[in-house]
Length: 330
Image (cartoon, rainbow, N blue to C red; front, side):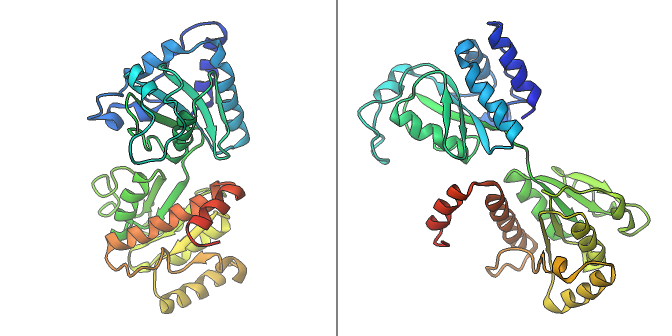
């Protein structure tokens, strides 16, 4: 989400103009995301925008503050397609009932919700609405068809975590597809166009190194919140990759390979000026352990670990405590 988009919406509302909401800024409403859904699409944004008034300004102001503070937060959208059904339905015969009231009203609503489950909206929500509104923190659309007459969508107010795939190996191909699918910004790096190309990495940002090696990697900056997966073909450039990741102080770095190979890489990395303490930061072997062998299976193990690292990094201590308990890890 771009800050200027929220600022423009606030300016329009203050001037009592109908703001412009575009699917490119709110991807949950794009044609791709809503294909086959008869109740929501790009045109839904115009309907929602027409209902916004100056009273909705605090919702977007709270969103702006969350962006400035780096809060884990979302703009949520209540989309009503059958007002009578939305208000009348209180029980779907599976989930528990949330009182004797269905949706609070039959009108669309834009609201703010963050990891702490703080909700800001221009109108009061019913208990059942609150139950579903909080679920926008799970993603663009979660539990969106539980009750008749309405559906829900959301747009994150924070950016994607960038994942560097150092090496265009077959495992990296599989990791790139899965990591993109679960919301990472994927950057694939290699020196050989036969392996690093659009056909193998269609959704990734691709960086081609020159000279037949990884020497140019040293000239590329990484951010402290980046993740690095060392997956070079034949492990030939694992030492350079580990040194680069550690010297850039990335949040996470993992390397594929057996213990014997890792011992050799260790000696080369330490000889390159990396401390033992920094070397210990390298997750080796990369990925969760569950018997993965093939490139596709290894990718599942690796991306599962990336998701877990992202969860631990992003969510509040209170939210992590609740979730860790549910996972049996507390």
